[in-house]
Amino acid sequence: MDIEAPRTHSHQAYTDADGGRWCEVYLDTYRLPSGAETVRHRVRVGGGRTGVVVLARRGEDILLVRQWRPTTGRWAWELPRGFGETDPLSDALRELVEETGLVGSAAAAVAYLDVDSGLLESEVAVVEVSVQGDARLRPGAVGDGEIAAARWWSPREIAQAIRAGELRDGFTLAALGASRAVRD
Image (cartoon, rainbow, N blue to C red; front, side, top):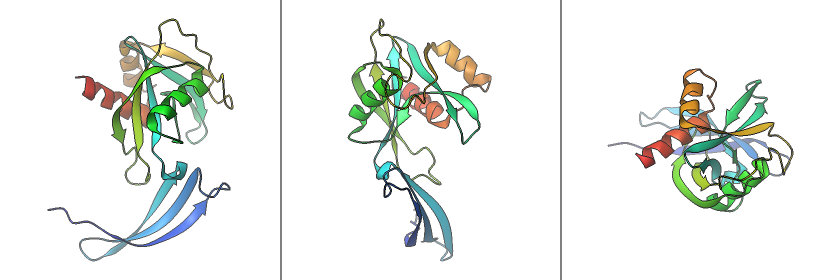
């Protein structure tokens, strides 16, 4: 039987200028089953609301966006994603418009992920969205212009990019895997 390790103390080490709307960092003390105590960092993003990663489909093709990621110091192809503001389905449709200008339909949550269970508190919903075949991409159409490019990828192209180490974003890989498991 699994024994829980209860949190015995929590200290907020950081909160953003918006009072924790986007990022908070905590130092938490836990009592392990052995009786020993350990201190861990915990990060809460988006106020603890469920985030969203958008798996937009046009037939079998999947939409990826390209953006600069300062934390890794490189450009990344990845699925659109964002903070939760209302509910996962509405958030997915909003993120898709903000990042690509595309209007999706038939949104459905297919999985929920703990993308870094050792650090991040918030879960992320994988939401599949259908997009009409003739819809026109407009990367960064709305929002702050963080998206440099967007394009449709075939399943074969995605597999090749993963094998070549060109597609390595953890949100994207986990969402693709979860979606495939649900479909199989």
